[in-house]
Image 1 (cartoon, rainbow, N blue to C red):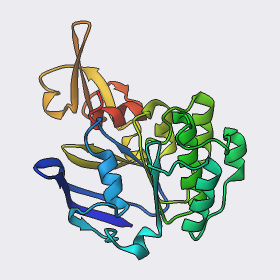
Image 2 (cartoon, rainbow, N blue to C red):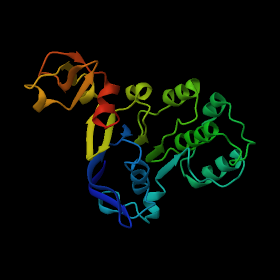
Image 3 (spheres, rainbow, N blue to C red):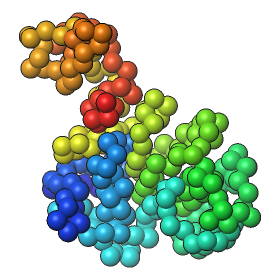
Image 4 (spheres, rainbow, N blue to C red):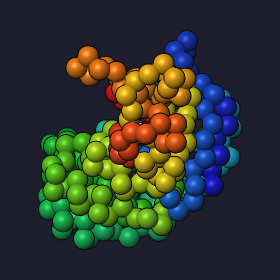
Length: 254
């Protein structure tokens, strides 16, 4: 397990986040959720050892070759060289010691490997990132918004191929379709909230708003002039809140 304690990152005078505490559990899929600009990509880069940080990361990744060799970090915006996709995969195979090319993903995505990276569409770059991440068989896999540019069919291929015995952190906002595939949720906002899927699934209900419920509400909404509150189950009778909605609301996405 990787532990983060009091993890902070700034660029000059600009503070990206401060004092994050969370755990990454071995052999589980973690969804990293938060508003745009909250620092999800920066956090992944710290976990990958690419940037300095303040605080503690138990695997001590920064500038640590032995640790960095056990991590793969990729996504749709990874700055790969302008080679053919085939050549990028060949180079990746030489980089990661447990590489095993996922030919089944190549076939399923129908990816043209003769395309240069500069000419590749956003969807093709996402496919490449997914293939690299899953073929690397790294101890820690970090994926940044890997489904961007993919159509429904190709996103389904991605979700269906997520390995449920590997330690992964995936930055995502597509919660309606992805929430059911993850074991744990890291919710970035004012600090970090860390939940298992079981803790969030039907853990909250939507109830009519009232002053008595206000101290317990994690969110209050006005819809068509009527107040409703989202509160923990057991505080009030109400409609169970689906997992994806619970993640989105606690992650500050609406």
